[in-house]
Image (cartoon, rainbow, N blue to C red; front, side, top):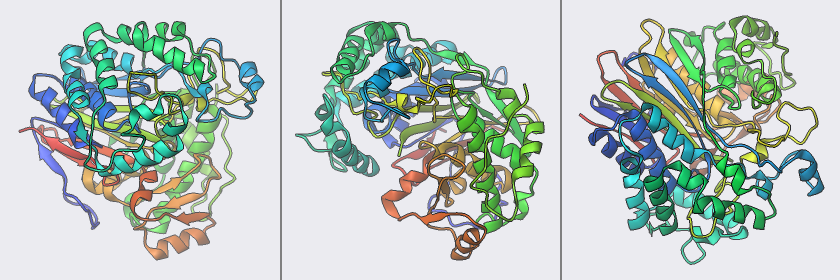
Length: 544
């Protein structure tokens, strides 16, 4: 990787290797992925092994009770495929039912109506079936061992666990199953999860159907219904993943790939298209002029994203038009290089959140960017008795507004925040690398900042992840912009002078609002260079 980059203090050094690499937010999950690569697995196998290990070691953020999305680059064909492992609303959950239960505007994140069918388990199985080499039983073995034998809880995870127990788990059915005598595990304390080990063993032995049609499905439906929801065993049995055509756009000499709606990856592509008209490489990476352009591009992208992104199988979503260069040229007219525009509105195209993202590249050059999520900390906090995992609250992404593209409807997928990313080289179609930055509406913003650092400044992965970030917290065009410590005072003052409504973020644990990212880049000669976000507990590790 090139070292010809602007000076920037980095707290970690990038990791290099040639025989495969895994970058994730938990070292024990990285170890599970590397073990799978050593055992003859490829990037797909290692991704699922990492996902399952993260379900054990970081249950506040992810798990088998949540959803997943993945992008996979196949080295033999140079093709990118997109897996949508998100679940759907229950058949009996209508807008009228939600309103009859006293809900209006949106579904609360703690409501049993926020539980959609967990799509992760099917997603794991389907990724291995299409792209993997190993059996599901072999891939899940490291995670099962972690759940049965226990693991020492990492510092950031312990902090999140404590917060999630107080605001979620302690108030929901079965929540205290994920505690030690009613409290969260402390940093370095061993936590065992026999219920989750049992769940994973059922899946390892019987495949994903054992989850969706067996004991776990009955326990999930029972827990949701006891909490006032309507999710039924029939909803779980009917679940399927889908393989979608990924979206992409060019930025400088790279092609950036994202999953299509119902995910929000389109926001990053739209923002990159807008910024293509400006010479960001000539601007100070931590200067007000560049940050102003980045923020304003993101405002316009969010305005479109929140207006148009929905389940395209149910609602009309003008996807191709949104990511077209012609549409970006028109939208760019609404970007003032001098003044903030928090009143940005959606265009009209023609015709605290918790998530994990991890990246894997194997020796052959296959790459996988994978996202698994509960949404908020521990999702709804509802834990099916005896199975050791919380249920997500993705249904809170629906709108209860009549006529909205994302209006709640039975068997519909909600607006989804999670989004993996992959970069390929325009020159030869080769893999440049999988990447991602997780955390609710921070995700498209994190993708934008990382891609700009990599493409405009030729930064290495670790330096790109270490840079200070901004976060339009509400994911809307008019949202307040939170600024991470590290932006120079002069740049902060200049942004305020340009009309941005800013707030300074506290240092330390508060930095988690700016996301948790992982990046692995691959040179044409096979050399791998990886980085892992300092805002989490993780690392990047390689094989020789």
